[in-house]
Amino acid sequence: MKKIKDLLDKYYIGETSLEEELSLREYFQAKNIPAELSFHKEQFAYYDSEKSKEELKSDFDDKVLNEISSFKVSKLPVYFRTTWFRAASVAAGFLLIFGLTAIFYFSNPIGEKNKIAISAEELFAYEQTVDALLTASKYIKKANHELEKISIINRTTEALDEVNYIEKYNKYVLNLLGDES
View (cartoon, rainbow, N blue to C red):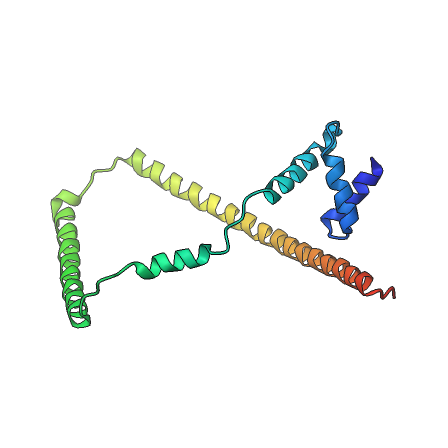
């Protein structure tokens, strides 16, 4: 069991030989696998099922390209397309300006209709709500500042992880080249 776990560790960092990978595949094809390794059994079964899937035939690309090239697209003359596009753009601009003007003009009448009567209690509640929101905003800004510090630490940790990965890769390459310095 320890040997399989060691092989799995080597497998996931890419240091297994073809023979070791074959022994892992054979091990996980067995029926009685411990529960803690059942995930790996499913993973290796997936790899085997993907190998047995049918691949595309060699003439697939040619068939697709022939089908695409046989499709005819009729184009309008360039003059007609650019003139029509410019006219439609100008008309759309006028409609947009007219529509926005109408919305603002009719939805915001000037005069006594806009005045709203507010009681003293409602005004007091409004002021308290604004104060509470400003206080909450202040605490959120402080918390955000602290989170930025944590984010810096997290980025530093990620950078160290990348350095560790590069060191492992260098050791692997040196092992491949036979340089054991």
